[in-house]
Image 1 (cartoon, rainbow, N blue to C red):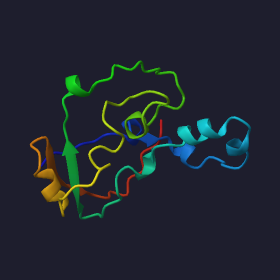
Image 2: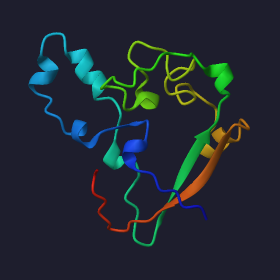
Image 3: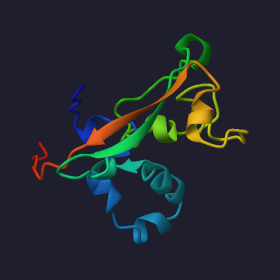
Image 4: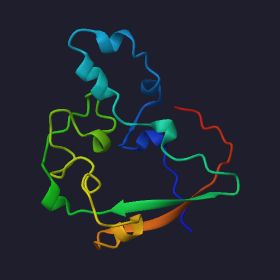
Length: 144
């Protein structure tokens, strides 16, 4: 069994905890700021990245797909100082093609004849399914 430890803020699909609970009142209605407000709110809340699990462990399915970087890259410039780039592989980079040449959501953005996720993954050698066991330890890790 492999054990993987990674902090939620190291993910490239999440937004920070504080942005999850921001005030959506006046900021979203300010003239010219709605698009920026909505885009900066795109992403999965970092504190919900992994299900809670149980003390004895709870098993979940995991799906993985690998693509050829050289075939899919768009070589977009990435501004690391942009305050809205937290979840770039989940939401893309505003007004850019990143993360790759494929449509956002690919391959789940189209109909497939597969009836189960296993059938879907079996269609190609670059996709696979596995199981993960999430164990709840009731441990608080201070945000630093």
